[in-house]
Amino acid sequence: MKRSASAHWSGGIKDGQGTITTETGVLSEATYGFKSRFEDGPGTNPEELIAAAHAGCYSMALSLGLGNAGFTADSIDTKAAVTLAKDGDGFTITTVDLSCRAKVPGIDAATFDSIAQATKLACPVSKVLKAEITLDARLEG
Image (spheres, rainbow, N blue to C red):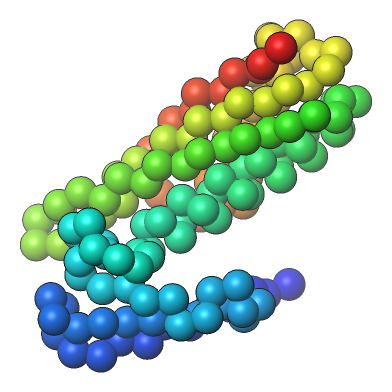
């Protein structure tokens, strides 16, 4: 299975503007630029899209891990915060902080934590990222 997206850019790094489009059309010429990436300007940015992908992937992978252990979540809510930091002359994504809250009937906290931590490593998006990935996973009653 392959999924794709494309990006178009015109102009210089600070005065230029780009668009991002996904194969499914969920994003169709979504704008991005220097201000949306490094300041608080309108539009999206690559780090926000990585965060969205990681949060979605982790939630689905956790559902799979819970299911394999005989549990079904009532809800799984995951937030991913991607940190972009200066690295010499360029930038590096240094960390991804995952925060997950889940309601899972019948599971104890130790079992949930074990599955949540294993999922952090097994999630396909986690595997592709070289950044440090932290996880704060909590079972809610």
